[in-house]
Structure formats: structure tokens, C-alpha cells
Image (cartoon, rainbow, N blue to C red; front, side, top):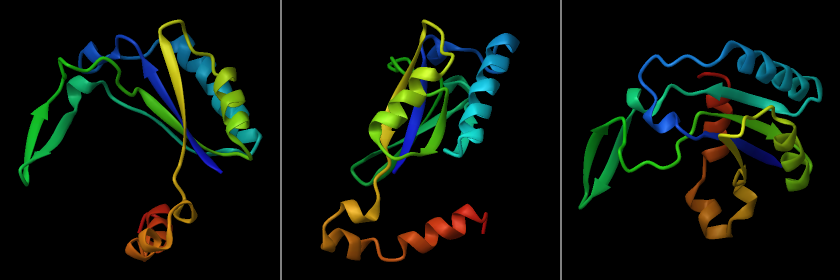
Amino acid sequence: MRFMLLMIPKGYETAAPGTAPDAQAVAAMMKFNESLQKAGVLLALDGLHPPSMGARVTFENGKARVTDGPFAEAKEVLGGYWMLQVKSRDEAIAWAMRCPGSPHETIEVRQVQELADFPADVQAAASGFAEMQARAGRGA
């Protein structure tokens, strides 16, 4: 089962462009990342620049609209993620609990949808999805 651990740092929604993380916090996080890797459960991980450097594309009446960050209405934003391959939701939660997060950080644990989770008509509509994933994983 694949799960994403989504880091939601409070206050990051208003962080200025180029805001750098604390070196000690990064060192602690690297130890956590290494433990995920050594356990063989880590598939991917990345940190994200603050929303002030991002954009949102919304859709209404068939038209796309772009809004540059920061986003005044945002209460929670992503700061980064880990993608894990584990045996259960409980195992994913156990890993999240080992993260050296600070009091202003939350980790949301979400299971990744697998094609087999869907009824036959949805699987048929997604024909070719597995091949796309495989090519994307190779950087093709």
C-alpha cells in the first residue's frame, strides 16, 4: 500500500519567497529520511517552496484562472511530502509519529488510490494509466 505523508507547517502560508528552513531542523529531518530509506519504505520525498512563490489554477464555467501566491484564504498549505510503500495504514501512521516535527507542524497521512480500488467502468476509463505511471517513474 502506498501512503503519502503530507507536511503541513503552520505559518508557512505567509512565508516570504526564499525563506530558508532551520539547519538543525533539516539535520533532524534528514535522520528521519535516512531511517525511512534504510527500512526500505521510502519511494519519494520533496520539500516545497512557500506559497508566495506558487500559483493556483482554478476552473469555473470551462475557463481557467491563475492566481499568484500567497493565497490570503489559505489556512493550511503543504510544505513537503513523503511517499511510502508500507503494509498498512497503521504502519504509515507509525512512521509519521516518528517524524521530528515541531509543535507548529502537522502530518496528514493519506492512502494513494490504486486502480484496483475502483469499479470496472472507472478502471476501463483509466486504461493506460499504469503505463503512464511507469513512464513517469523513468522520467520518460
